[in-house]
Amino acid sequence: MMNIMKRLFLATLLATFFFSCIEDDDINVEVVEALPYNITISNAGNYNATNASVSILTQTNGIVDSIQNAIFESVNGVSLGDVLQSIAVNDNYMFLVVNNSHKIEVVDRVTFKSVKTISINSPRYMTIIDDTKAYISAWGSTNTGDEVSILDLESLTITGTISTGEPGPEAMLLVDEFLYVTHSGGHGSSEAVTIINTNADTVYKQLTAYVAPSAIIQDANETIWVNCRGAYTQDWSSVTMAMIKIDPTTQEITDTIELGTSTEATVRLLKDNTGQTLYYKKGDGIYSLDISTSTVNESPLISGSFYGLGIDPANGNILTGAYNFTSSENSASIYNKSGELISTFDAGIAPSEFYFFE
Image: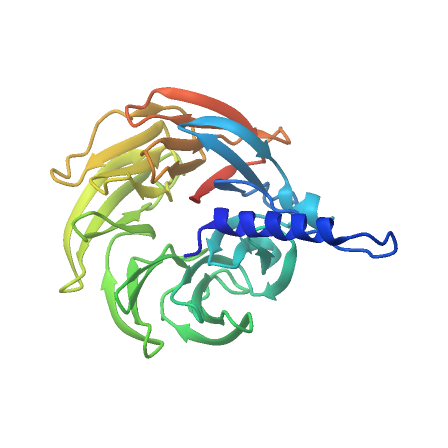
Protein backbone atom coordinates (compact mmCIF):
# COMPACT_ATOMS: atom_id res chain seq x y z
CA MET A 1 0.00 0.00 0.00
CA MET A 2 1.33 3.39 -0.97
CA ASN A 3 2.83 5.25 1.94
CA ILE A 4 0.51 8.19 2.61
CA MET A 5 3.41 10.44 3.54
CA LYS A 6 4.77 10.03 0.00
CA ARG A 7 1.46 11.27 -1.38
CA LEU A 8 1.52 14.21 1.02
CA PHE A 9 5.04 15.07 -0.17
CA LEU A 10 4.04 14.87 -3.83
CA ALA A 11 1.00 17.08 -3.26
CA THR A 12 3.14 19.68 -1.51
CA LEU A 13 5.80 19.48 -4.24
CA LEU A 14 3.24 20.04 -6.98
CA ALA A 15 1.74 22.98 -5.13
CA THR A 16 5.20 24.55 -4.79
CA PHE A 17 5.90 24.01 -8.49
CA PHE A 18 2.65 25.67 -9.58
CA PHE A 19 3.19 28.69 -7.35
CA SER A 20 6.76 29.17 -8.62
CA CYS A 21 5.56 29.14 -12.23
CA ILE A 22 2.70 31.64 -11.85
CA GLU A 23 3.52 35.12 -13.09
CA ASP A 24 0.19 36.19 -14.57
CA ASP A 25 -2.37 37.31 -11.99
CA ASP A 26 -5.15 36.14 -14.34
CA ILE A 27 -4.07 32.51 -14.10
CA ASN A 28 -6.04 30.61 -11.44
CA VAL A 29 -4.53 27.40 -10.14
CA GLU A 30 -6.43 25.13 -7.75
CA VAL A 31 -3.97 23.98 -5.12
CA VAL A 32 -4.82 20.66 -3.47
CA GLU A 33 -4.28 20.88 0.27
CA ALA A 34 -2.67 17.75 1.66
CA LEU A 35 -3.93 16.93 5.15
CA PRO A 36 -1.22 15.52 7.43
CA TYR A 37 -2.24 12.66 9.73
CA ASN A 38 -1.10 9.26 10.92
CA ILE A 39 -4.29 8.19 12.71
CA THR A 40 -7.90 8.39 11.53
CA ILE A 41 -10.79 7.93 13.97
CA SER A 42 -14.30 6.90 12.98
CA ASN A 43 -16.78 8.64 15.28
CA ALA A 44 -20.07 6.77 15.04
CA GLY A 45 -22.28 9.61 16.24
CA ASN A 46 -25.76 9.24 17.71
CA TYR A 47 -28.24 6.83 16.17
CA ASN A 48 -30.94 8.56 14.09
CA ALA A 49 -28.87 11.75 13.97
CA THR A 50 -26.53 13.12 11.32
CA ASN A 51 -23.56 13.76 13.56
CA ALA A 52 -21.21 10.96 12.56
CA SER A 53 -17.75 12.31 11.82
CA VAL A 54 -14.09 11.58 11.13
CA SER A 55 -11.14 12.87 13.17
CA ILE A 56 -7.57 12.95 11.90
CA LEU A 57 -4.53 13.43 14.08
CA THR A 58 -0.78 13.21 14.19
CA GLN A 59 0.88 11.71 17.24
CA THR A 60 4.32 10.62 18.35
CA ASN A 61 4.61 7.75 20.84
CA GLY A 62 1.17 8.51 22.23
CA ILE A 63 1.54 12.28 22.46
CA VAL A 64 -0.90 14.08 20.17
CA ASP A 65 0.76 16.73 18.00
CA SER A 66 -2.36 17.94 16.17
CA ILE A 67 -5.99 16.93 15.66
CA GLN A 68 -8.78 18.00 13.33
CA ASN A 69 -12.32 16.88 14.12
CA ALA A 70 -15.21 16.71 11.66
CA ILE A 71 -12.79 16.72 8.73
CA PHE A 72 -15.33 15.43 6.17
CA GLU A 73 -17.71 18.29 6.96
CA SER A 74 -14.90 20.83 6.96
CA VAL A 75 -13.64 19.78 3.52
CA ASN A 76 -16.93 19.02 1.76
CA GLY A 77 -19.37 21.42 3.44
CA VAL A 78 -21.98 18.75 4.23
CA SER A 79 -22.56 16.38 7.13
CA LEU A 80 -21.23 12.85 6.83
CA GLY A 81 -24.45 11.17 7.95
CA ASP A 82 -25.98 8.83 10.51
CA VAL A 83 -23.72 6.27 12.25
CA LEU A 84 -20.24 5.85 10.80
CA GLN A 85 -19.83 2.11 11.29
CA SER A 86 -16.32 1.58 9.93
CA ILE A 87 -13.67 2.71 7.46
CA ALA A 88 -11.75 0.85 4.74
CA VAL A 89 -8.65 2.16 2.95
CA ASN A 90 -6.74 1.47 -0.24
CA ASP A 91 -3.94 3.36 -1.99
CA ASN A 92 -6.16 6.16 -3.29
CA TYR A 93 -9.39 6.25 -1.33
CA MET A 94 -10.91 6.07 2.10
CA PHE A 95 -14.30 4.37 2.23
CA LEU A 96 -16.54 5.74 5.00
CA VAL A 97 -19.20 3.12 5.76
CA VAL A 98 -22.22 5.09 7.03
CA ASN A 99 -24.66 2.49 8.34
CA ASN A 100 -27.90 4.31 9.07
CA SER A 101 -27.57 6.66 6.09
CA HIS A 102 -27.36 3.55 3.88
CA LYS A 103 -24.29 4.61 1.97
CA ILE A 104 -20.53 4.52 1.61
CA GLU A 105 -18.82 7.86 1.13
CA VAL A 106 -15.67 7.57 -0.96
CA VAL A 107 -13.10 10.29 -0.28
CA ASP A 108 -9.59 11.02 -1.47
CA ARG A 109 -7.07 9.72 1.07
CA VAL A 110 -4.94 12.84 0.98
CA THR A 111 -7.48 15.65 0.77
CA PHE A 112 -10.68 14.02 2.11
CA LYS A 113 -12.58 15.52 -0.81
CA SER A 114 -15.67 13.52 -1.74
CA VAL A 115 -15.26 11.32 -4.81
CA LYS A 116 -18.49 9.31 -4.91
CA THR A 117 -21.41 8.14 -2.80
CA ILE A 118 -22.30 4.44 -3.06
CA SER A 119 -25.85 3.53 -2.02
CA ILE A 120 -26.31 0.30 -0.02
CA ASN A 121 -28.81 -0.66 2.69
CA SER A 122 -27.33 -0.79 6.21
CA PRO A 123 -23.66 -1.42 5.36
CA ARG A 124 -21.42 -2.64 8.18
CA TYR A 125 -17.86 -3.40 7.09
CA MET A 126 -15.76 -3.44 3.94
CA THR A 127 -12.76 -5.66 3.17
CA ILE A 128 -10.48 -4.91 0.23
CA ILE A 129 -9.33 -8.03 -1.64
CA ASP A 130 -7.01 -6.55 -4.25
CA ASP A 131 -6.70 -3.50 -6.52
CA THR A 132 -9.99 -4.26 -8.28
CA LYS A 133 -12.37 -5.86 -5.79
CA ALA A 134 -13.78 -5.44 -2.28
CA TYR A 135 -16.58 -7.02 -0.26
CA ILE A 136 -19.19 -5.17 1.82
CA SER A 137 -21.20 -6.76 4.61
CA ALA A 138 -24.68 -5.28 4.99
CA TRP A 139 -27.89 -5.96 6.88
CA GLY A 140 -30.19 -4.88 4.06
CA SER A 141 -33.48 -3.02 4.24
CA THR A 142 -34.87 -5.29 6.99
CA ASN A 143 -31.69 -5.36 9.10
CA THR A 144 -31.82 -9.15 8.86
CA GLY A 145 -30.32 -9.47 5.38
CA ASP A 146 -27.77 -12.15 4.54
CA GLU A 147 -25.89 -10.66 1.61
CA VAL A 148 -22.27 -9.70 1.07
CA SER A 149 -21.92 -7.26 -1.82
CA ILE A 150 -19.10 -7.18 -4.38
CA LEU A 151 -17.59 -3.76 -5.12
CA ASP A 152 -15.59 -2.98 -8.27
CA LEU A 153 -12.83 -0.67 -7.05
CA GLU A 154 -12.11 0.70 -10.52
CA SER A 155 -15.65 1.87 -11.33
CA LEU A 156 -16.68 2.19 -7.64
CA THR A 157 -19.91 0.34 -8.39
CA ILE A 158 -21.52 -2.72 -6.79
CA THR A 159 -21.42 -5.50 -9.37
CA GLY A 160 -23.04 -8.39 -7.50
CA THR A 161 -24.05 -9.98 -4.20
CA ILE A 162 -23.41 -13.26 -2.43
CA SER A 163 -26.27 -14.74 -0.40
CA THR A 164 -24.88 -16.41 2.74
CA GLY A 165 -28.12 -17.80 4.14
CA GLU A 166 -27.37 -16.29 7.59
CA PRO A 167 -28.59 -12.88 8.82
CA GLY A 168 -26.46 -9.95 9.85
CA PRO A 169 -23.09 -10.33 8.12
CA GLU A 170 -20.58 -8.34 10.14
CA ALA A 171 -16.78 -8.12 10.34
CA MET A 172 -14.71 -9.97 7.74
CA LEU A 173 -11.16 -11.33 7.42
CA LEU A 174 -9.25 -12.31 4.28
CA VAL A 175 -7.01 -15.38 4.65
CA ASP A 176 -5.43 -16.48 1.38
CA GLU A 177 -8.29 -16.73 -1.14
CA PHE A 178 -10.95 -17.20 1.55
CA LEU A 179 -13.06 -14.50 3.19
CA TYR A 180 -14.27 -15.31 6.70
CA VAL A 181 -17.54 -13.51 7.45
CA THR A 182 -18.95 -13.25 10.97
CA HIS A 183 -22.72 -13.05 11.48
CA SER A 184 -23.99 -11.06 14.45
CA GLY A 185 -27.55 -11.73 13.28
CA GLY A 186 -28.45 -8.08 12.74
CA HIS A 187 -31.87 -7.62 14.27
CA GLY A 188 -32.27 -11.40 14.18
CA SER A 189 -29.90 -14.05 15.50
CA SER A 190 -27.05 -16.18 14.18
CA GLU A 191 -24.15 -18.37 15.31
CA ALA A 192 -22.49 -18.63 11.91
CA VAL A 193 -19.14 -17.87 10.36
CA THR A 194 -19.35 -18.06 6.56
CA ILE A 195 -16.30 -18.83 4.42
CA ILE A 196 -16.45 -17.34 0.91
CA ASN A 197 -14.18 -18.38 -1.97
CA THR A 198 -13.11 -15.01 -3.36
CA ASN A 199 -12.02 -16.51 -6.68
CA ALA A 200 -15.49 -17.85 -7.37
CA ASP A 201 -17.55 -15.36 -5.29
CA THR A 202 -19.46 -18.27 -3.75
CA VAL A 203 -20.02 -19.66 -0.26
CA TYR A 204 -17.42 -22.38 0.31
CA LYS A 205 -18.26 -23.47 3.84
CA GLN A 206 -20.18 -22.44 6.94
CA LEU A 207 -19.25 -22.98 10.59
CA THR A 208 -21.49 -22.94 13.67
CA ALA A 209 -19.66 -20.92 16.31
CA TYR A 210 -21.42 -19.24 19.27
CA VAL A 211 -24.14 -16.65 19.60
CA ALA A 212 -23.53 -13.50 17.52
CA PRO A 213 -19.99 -13.75 16.08
CA SER A 214 -19.04 -10.11 15.60
CA ALA A 215 -15.28 -9.47 15.35
CA ILE A 216 -12.44 -11.47 13.79
CA ILE A 217 -8.62 -11.34 13.58
CA GLN A 218 -5.63 -13.60 12.86
CA ASP A 219 -2.80 -13.88 15.40
CA ALA A 220 0.96 -14.31 14.98
CA ASN A 221 0.53 -18.09 14.70
CA GLU A 222 -2.06 -17.60 11.93
CA THR A 223 -4.87 -18.89 14.15
CA ILE A 224 -8.18 -17.14 13.48
CA TRP A 225 -10.02 -15.76 16.52
CA VAL A 226 -13.69 -14.76 16.53
CA ASN A 227 -15.25 -12.67 19.30
CA CYS A 228 -18.87 -13.70 19.88
CA ARG A 229 -20.83 -11.11 21.82
CA GLY A 230 -23.39 -13.68 23.00
CA ALA A 231 -27.05 -13.32 23.95
CA TYR A 232 -28.48 -11.02 26.58
CA THR A 233 -30.45 -12.35 29.50
CA GLN A 234 -34.21 -11.95 29.33
CA ASP A 235 -34.11 -8.74 31.38
CA TRP A 236 -31.22 -7.35 29.25
CA SER A 237 -29.03 -6.93 32.34
CA SER A 238 -26.06 -8.97 31.15
CA VAL A 239 -24.64 -10.95 28.27
CA THR A 240 -22.45 -14.08 28.16
CA MET A 241 -19.58 -13.84 25.69
CA ALA A 242 -17.10 -16.27 24.14
CA MET A 243 -14.11 -16.45 21.82
CA ILE A 244 -13.67 -19.21 19.25
CA LYS A 245 -10.52 -20.36 17.47
CA ILE A 246 -10.43 -21.53 13.85
CA ASP A 247 -7.62 -23.45 12.17
CA PRO A 248 -7.20 -21.82 8.72
CA THR A 249 -5.73 -25.06 7.30
CA THR A 250 -8.64 -27.33 8.22
CA GLN A 251 -11.13 -24.45 8.37
CA GLU A 252 -12.64 -26.00 11.49
CA ILE A 253 -13.30 -24.64 14.98
CA THR A 254 -10.66 -25.94 17.39
CA ASP A 255 -11.65 -24.31 20.68
CA THR A 256 -14.30 -22.22 22.41
CA ILE A 257 -13.20 -19.96 25.27
CA GLU A 258 -15.89 -18.51 27.50
CA LEU A 259 -15.22 -14.91 28.48
CA GLY A 260 -17.83 -14.67 31.22
CA THR A 261 -20.66 -12.20 31.57
CA SER A 262 -20.69 -8.49 30.87
CA THR A 263 -23.12 -5.64 31.33
CA GLU A 264 -22.76 -4.85 27.63
CA ALA A 265 -22.01 -6.78 24.47
CA THR A 266 -18.59 -6.28 22.95
CA VAL A 267 -17.77 -6.06 19.25
CA ARG A 268 -14.10 -5.12 19.54
CA LEU A 269 -11.28 -7.63 19.10
CA LEU A 270 -7.73 -6.55 18.27
CA LYS A 271 -4.15 -7.82 18.57
CA ASP A 272 -0.98 -6.11 19.74
CA ASN A 273 1.94 -5.22 17.49
CA THR A 274 3.46 -8.69 17.97
CA GLY A 275 0.27 -10.64 17.37
CA GLN A 276 0.83 -12.50 20.67
CA THR A 277 -1.74 -10.65 22.80
CA LEU A 278 -5.41 -10.07 22.05
CA TYR A 279 -7.52 -7.23 23.42
CA TYR A 280 -11.29 -7.17 23.80
CA LYS A 281 -13.84 -4.96 25.51
CA LYS A 282 -16.34 -5.73 28.26
CA GLY A 283 -18.62 -3.48 30.28
CA ASP A 284 -16.00 -2.76 32.93
CA GLY A 285 -12.94 -2.22 30.75
CA ILE A 286 -10.36 -3.50 28.27
CA TYR A 287 -9.15 -7.06 28.74
CA SER A 288 -6.07 -8.83 27.39
CA LEU A 289 -5.58 -12.48 26.45
CA ASP A 290 -2.26 -14.24 25.84
CA ILE A 291 -2.62 -16.50 22.78
CA SER A 292 -0.07 -18.99 24.16
CA THR A 293 -2.20 -19.83 27.19
CA SER A 294 -5.71 -18.66 26.20
CA THR A 295 -6.17 -17.86 29.88
CA VAL A 296 -9.03 -15.45 30.56
CA ASN A 297 -8.13 -12.64 32.95
CA GLU A 298 -10.62 -11.94 35.70
CA SER A 299 -9.78 -8.24 35.86
CA PRO A 300 -9.43 -5.69 33.06
CA LEU A 301 -6.06 -4.32 31.99
CA ILE A 302 -7.69 -0.87 31.76
CA SER A 303 -10.75 -0.21 33.89
CA GLY A 304 -13.57 2.02 32.68
CA SER A 305 -16.51 2.24 30.34
CA PHE A 306 -15.29 2.43 26.75
CA TYR A 307 -16.96 2.52 23.35
CA GLY A 308 -14.00 2.29 20.97
CA LEU A 309 -10.73 0.38 20.87
CA GLY A 310 -7.59 0.53 18.72
CA ILE A 311 -4.02 -0.77 18.85
CA ASP A 312 -1.08 1.15 17.37
CA PRO A 313 0.80 -1.39 15.21
CA ALA A 314 4.05 0.56 15.62
CA ASN A 315 4.39 0.30 19.39
CA GLY A 316 1.36 -1.56 20.75
CA ASN A 317 -0.16 1.50 22.44
CA ILE A 318 -3.85 1.05 23.28
CA LEU A 319 -6.36 3.68 22.13
CA THR A 320 -9.84 3.92 23.62
CA GLY A 321 -12.92 5.99 22.92
CA ALA A 322 -15.56 7.10 25.44
CA TYR A 323 -19.21 7.80 24.63
CA ASN A 324 -21.12 10.69 26.21
CA PHE A 325 -24.64 10.95 24.80
CA THR A 326 -25.05 14.56 25.90
CA SER A 327 -21.81 15.99 24.48
CA SER A 328 -20.93 17.12 20.97
CA GLU A 329 -17.38 15.89 21.57
CA ASN A 330 -16.22 12.73 23.33
CA SER A 331 -12.80 11.92 24.64
CA ALA A 332 -10.27 9.41 23.37
CA SER A 333 -7.22 8.22 25.27
CA ILE A 334 -3.89 6.56 24.57
CA TYR A 335 -2.38 4.01 26.99
CA ASN A 336 0.85 2.06 26.83
CA LYS A 337 0.89 -1.75 26.71
CA SER A 338 0.93 -1.89 30.50
CA GLY A 339 -2.35 0.02 30.66
CA GLU A 340 -0.81 3.29 31.86
CA LEU A 341 -2.41 6.49 30.56
CA ILE A 342 -0.25 8.57 28.19
CA SER A 343 -2.66 11.21 26.88
CA THR A 344 -6.32 12.15 26.42
CA PHE A 345 -7.86 14.32 23.70
CA ASP A 346 -11.26 15.38 22.33
CA ALA A 347 -12.70 13.53 19.32
CA GLY A 348 -16.18 13.39 17.79
CA ILE A 349 -19.25 11.65 19.20
CA ALA A 350 -18.66 7.98 20.01
CA PRO A 351 -15.09 7.38 18.77
CA SER A 352 -15.22 3.71 17.85
CA GLU A 353 -12.41 2.57 15.56
CA PHE A 354 -8.86 3.77 14.92
CA TYR A 355 -6.89 3.43 11.66
CA PHE A 356 -3.13 3.85 11.49
CA PHE A 357 -0.84 5.09 8.71
CA GLU A 358 2.92 5.31 8.32
